[in-house]
Length: 504
Length: 98
Image (cartoon, rainbow over all chains, first blue to last red; front, side, top):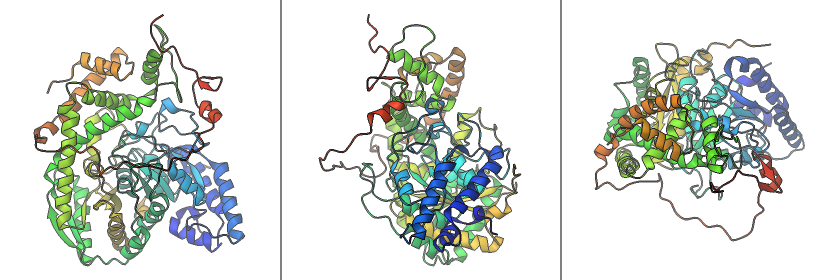
């Protein structure tokens, strides 16, 4: 019998629809896999077994009764712990929210439930999505399934590792500066950051509101398109939600799988290659460009001169917005409350003690940095300048997209590094996001698709960027590259990953 | 631009309502100095003629029909609070004066 956890979401959906397998069988298979590999991986902060099986039973009986269901009904999914889920603990990886059970669902969660996808659980992440390795989680590290001594990326390391290790066929991530795409790259999975406003932010625990965007984490480009179409589209509960239909994403992915990109103009961003990129990452990137050229794409080089300043602008804008968003963790209405050990117990002193005890190092660093950047006397030099750089980066993109249909780069400068390697050097950690950050600053969509292994045997990601609201182009190019590379490899990249030891 | 001193970090941490131990303050001050020096490069290209962008896509005000909708059940909201009494959040003394 087929191992149901190894199927793509699209294939599993097909077998569920034809009633070849039941959702209970598929959900149980994933829960068994979670039980077997979680001791080694720690992708999940909470496993939602009973409710997931109840959803699966309900879907099975509705399907048996002939009800018309969503294409993904019965396909299990994992959700990053920054998305609120009614009745399920939601911590955002922080001690300050430990044990908090939200009284409402995010719009993403509502749509997932309405479509009948059993929710397997909540995945580990860097605290409040601040980090590139998941090491800033208050609840322990997640390990990369390719090498358990290495990071799974971050902040969505739990979602990426869960999908890579067949604990879930689908997962939700959020991407503020690369937190979907960078983990995808270092775990050999697919991740998509939609256009800003393309997926509702209602019920995401906000990090930086002008940058945050939720999106799919999967093993194939088509699966991402299926999930993106489920969670995307207008939501009246999010004032920044785009009030237009999504472009045809699944259709674009299916078209891309033909491997024909005739007439597609692909721009290589010169600032996001070369120096600072690991030789194996560069080699795979160059080879992938040849694959795209072979598929009929026209490859041109473009310059985005202000990208050099993107990292600086990002690490001013993000902390500034975060310092404001995280002010709600004051020990009054939800989460942790700590009273000061000395002095008067007032709302102010409780807030200071609660945040001192409840926030981890990286969160403290960024809130203080943001408060500093916004404070009197520094605002113009820091936050004001960063907002101007944002304009310059948007202009760079506009000029580049005037000559191209999509832009491409390696997703990350290196493959997965060792756990602990960059933990004491915040700036070195920040540099992991150098290629992913510009898309967030400009609000444009981006995708990472695996494009081979580096010299160290670890997976490498290929990033595709498109103009705002042209997310379909990501899927067409991503699916084409995926199909052509898989034909070369003789199967998906994850077939090359070592089998995990299974606890029984 | 000025560099970030330990005293300045202490002042800003107090503004942000985050209690820090002296050891934390030492470490954070050193780390933040490196980060601030690195990000300060933005001011070299942010000249007066460049407009600021606060948001990736143009923002418009959004209205909805003025129809009442049910709020979250009070009991469910208070269930997540550190302390509650008589259907309200129970909070510490707000004003310092006696």
